[in-house]
Length: 70
Image (cartoon, rainbow, N blue to C red; front, side, top):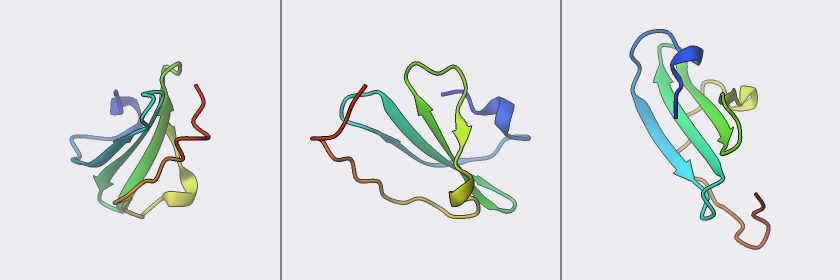
């Protein structure tokens, strides 16, 4: 998971969540303004910032196994 293009400098990764199927990933990175949360799909080249979660630290994610798709 390459977050280097979206971040400045070395910032610690707070948490990484991967769905049971291995297609969806959510990662939270600590930064000076709080935290940034990224989403990436297995087929994408670059992660996307989840703007609605800006400044919030994600500590838990629940995946609905019946609704997980590729």
